[in-house]
Length: 253
Length: 334
Image 1 (cartoon, rainbow over the protein chains, first blue to last red):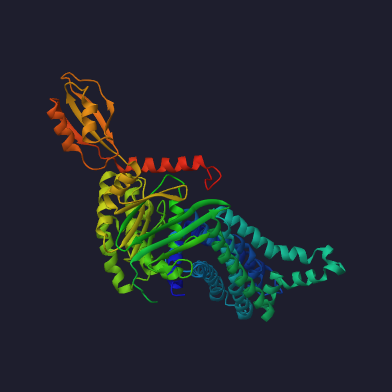
Image 2 (image 1 turned 90 degrees about the vertical axis):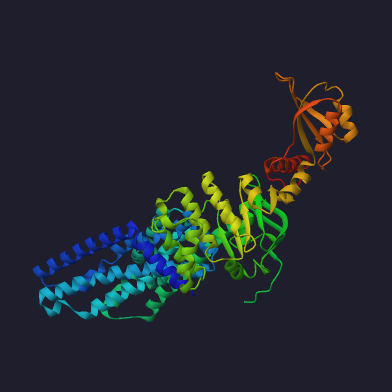
């Protein structure tokens, strides 16, 4: 693991000079800023049941779906397209170090984006002067959810990037996978055909993989070990598949 | 990590690599002693790049053994990667980085100690004449500079073995000269394996040449050996005037194998250009000249032809094509 930090530093720098990072950042702040102001307007007109933070994190999936691909689509696809993967892997580094370094760099930026959205809450606290709007519980729970689920989402992005040498194809694969996991679970939970007796185990699995439900639990302050394990095992699996994919491509190239 | 001193820097025995049943490399064996510069020649698709990739541990071999400095590539890939500087085909470089940043990153990956890295980068920049562009972005450099960045990168960590896939492609003659001097300056210190299409390049820089075609080695040795082995004859060109009728008899008395291959038309002064060939490889120039003069022929010029490596290359590859054509059941995929 001695090259992990070298690759991490290199990748962060590469992400910081890449236009797609800035597109992701601008889109993220525009979108979340609008969401936040809309929420505040609603709160100013009529009292609501939920705290603003928990409504705010309800829209987490929207930035995730475009931000994760923009951050990760380049990481392995571009290396392969340029052929720099050949120089990279013929230096004394392992595929594991390469994949983990790239993964960590994308995750770091993902966290930085989300962390800067905490400025919204700071501004609200500073100017609203109304303590009941700023309930620290849902905010902390929300950010914890973002941190943990981000592990999994970024890993999916890295995996998508390992499948293709074209970064736009990688990006589209990533969007499809994320939509499938985030929204597909919700859709399946309400699907009537899953109610049959024979499909009961499947129904249980779908109920377990409800990301929206996890978010709700986290913002209510319920941190369930099973939910943490869902994201951690998903991350490990996606990263293992990425490593295998990079190595398999070598065998067949 | 033990560094057992072995004489051979690169050892390849019975290397086979097949892609989906097609043999790209078919039973290649060769060794390269330390400090030698060896040229790797072959037409497109001969298996040069595949062999080089296997040597660096980037691709696994289908069968056979490869070892670098005594370390088998298959089982001790890490030790091998530490000992090889590799410049792949088409020299891939990240376009967004600056030259010095790129070299620093590669140096860190290649485990050059941080303290020594700065001065080492200065050294290779100097060596490859890159000082002017050290702060430029690689994507904006011309082809010649990019190529030299690739070369600088491969020698950066001072590995005992350097493998370069077509390092001089796309360079102008002046830059080729720089690269040639650069490679020559590594002689004795590092073992260099280069592939190239530019034959005079190989001939001038390399101690030994390997010619491969269709995944097999068709000829190997020093350029001079190859000439003798592959072409198997020497040729003389003589410009003479006078009665040429007696010439064949005359030549027969010097060397029974010596014969007139072609005879040109006479020019204004009556001189003709005559080409003589023989299977005997010893220089017979003096004897020919003396015989001609003794018969009263006027001789204006006599030269022994020096076949270029190009002729050797063409002859060797043609010979291997012929061998395949005769035996279509074996080996040949194309």
